[in-house]
Structure formats: C-alpha cells, structure tokens
Image (tube, rainbow, N blue to C red):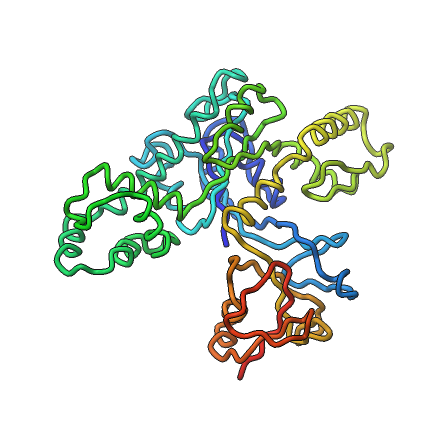
Length: 396
C-alpha cells in the first residue's frame, strides 16, 4: 500500500517525509523544492505477539522493539500543489500523476499560517490554513473530473443504449488510479444523478468526481508547524467535522529521530518523551533545544507525526495486522524465522484473502487455515482479527 503526502509548497512535506522515513529529501524555504517525487518506507506500530506467545521473534519484513512491531508502508512525497494545478499550473500535472496509486492521502498544511496560498513565506498568522483544505480537495476533484469526462459523450451514449453496468464502465475510465468499482458504487449512492448518463449536467459530473475522490483517496489533515501556530487556527481546524485533523511538528520529529540514530537520545517513534543518553555529548544549545521539544511533546502528547500516519492506515483505510506462519506450533516460516512477517489486510478479510496476499499459488490451492493460538482449523471464509497468527494449508 502507498501513502501520498500532499499539500501546497513549503508547508513541511519533505520534513514530514524525512522524519517518517529518515530519507534525505531536500528541504528549503521556497516553493517547489520537491520536483521529482520522493519515495520511502515508513513504519506503523502494533503490539508484537511474541511476548504473549512466549517466543523470541525474528522479523523478516518488519522490525520489533520493546514489544512493538513496526510494519512497513510505502510513502510518496509529491511536488507541492498550487491553485489551478489541474490546468497545469505550477507542477500540477506531475503532482497529480504521481498520486495515481496512493490509497490514502496525508494533507500537510501549515497550521501556523506562515505560507500563502501558493506556498510563499509570509508572517505567522497572516494566512488562514483552513482555506488550504478545500483548495486541495477541489484540485483533485477537478483532476478526476477531467479523466471522467474524457470521451464522455461517446461513453454516456453507449451506457444509455446498452444499459451496461455503470460502476464497471466508470471504473474502467480510471484505470491505473487505484479506483475500484466499489469506490464508484459508493459515490453513485452518495450523489443523486439520473439513470441516463447523457442527462448528467456539469454539476452532476463535478459532484460525482468529488464523491469518487472522497471514497478512493481518503484524506487525513496534518496540522503541521503546530508548535508555532496561533491557537485560534488550531481550534478552527479541530472543529472541522468532516475531517480528521492531527496536530504535527515534523521538524521536531525529524530532530528526535536524528538524535536517536546518532545515539544521543533514546526515542521510540510516536512516544511523548525521550531519554538523553549522555548530556556531556550535547552542547548547551542542543540541551536547551531538546528541553523545548520535550515541553511540546508533553503538551501535545507527541509530535503527532507517527500518530498521523497510523490513523491514516488503521482508521481511514480500516486495516489490521496479521501474521502468517508455516508452522503453527513453532510460529516459524520454512527458514525457522519466528513470527517472520506482519501483513496489513483490510478489516473483514478472510483466511483465503490472506493466502492470496502471501502468494497467488497459496490462494489458488487453499485447503484450510489454522489459528496458531487455538490450534483450531478455520475455513476459507473465516474473518481475520487484528493480531491473528495464521497457518495456511494448501495443495502445493
């Protein structure tokens, strides 16, 4: 799965990206620092079952620290978006094309109001960040409408004539964007349109495109630079009922992860505190800076960065973590790795769905599954629970 980091230029997207991936994306205080999309891997937390099961895990596709399993997710940091991007302004066309496969979007806004609508620096508090949310959603909606209405006259007439399955025909229009028939069907239920597509107005098409955006590219708001944001802006953002808003301080998260990597502090991503390992290795300015960060962590219960990514995955996408194994007694794979892999699957997924996710052959030749905790056989349609440890039996 892929998380897309979006927003106008100069709001801290690259800092956010670097903090969750520890990659080296360029950071600067001017628009369009990011031209080519940056890609990296972030990790989301879940409780590792190794302590409960009385084993020592040897993860292969993830990490484990102090009983916490860190599960990898792909992240893409795209070029900043400006008004009329869907018309090609700025780097709009490239931005939108880079988002094609993103399953969920983290919209990073400058909660301090220190960048104008095009991402140019301005005084703190001089631009209302709440205005940036609608603008970005509007750009993506218009982008999708442009794709939807391409060859619309021909498509709509054909649908009127043959009465084909509407959601299938529309989904085919969005091939390569990760937009499914299910997304289209949900959008059609939300928007009232005529049974005859030839009668749809421009407003109908725009409203449908907006609904498709809502279901296919769910979005969480990262209210970044919240440590210097006027409280009135935070209150305005928090009051938005249709959006999930998380206060973030990406600059502080990046500083903490760098200090942890340099073994100056002990810090677990997502924590609301840290331990200084050796004060003698830090200058007075560094110590003062860390104490300031500690104050912000205590006030906001963390930097919000890790929390933002996890809520996007667990709540917006409704995913759970399961652990496939080959030996349900030793909890190992064929190489002897204990609890080797942590897989993200949609809540409601079945044992057979997991088999297909592990390998196509396992799904095609699925026989049964075994719950490693209870040692009970479960069927193909058994619904998985978060944290399940599952053995897949197949005729391979």
